[in-house]
Image (cartoon, rainbow, N blue to C red):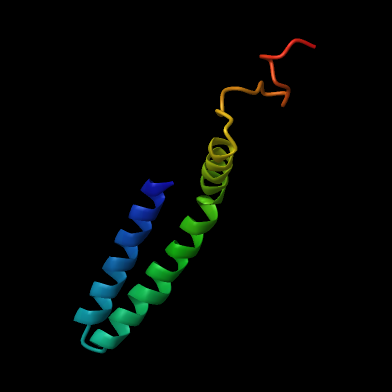
Length: 84
C-alpha cells in the first residue's frame, strides 16, 4: 500500500517541478498541482485503506478495557476456557 503511495507522490512531485520550471508555468500552479493531484487524493486513499486496521485496533482496545484478553475467545466467538 505504501509503495504505491510513495510512487504516486514521486510522480506528482515531478509534475509540480515541471510546472514550476516550465516557461509558461508558475510556482502557484506547481503548489496547486502538488496539493490537488498529490496530497488530497493520497490522504483520502490512505484513510480509506487504513480503516480495517483502525477498526481492529479499536476492537482490541475495547476488549482490553472490558477485561478480556484478545486470545481468550476462539475464532467462533465462544469462550473455550469454560466447560460446556
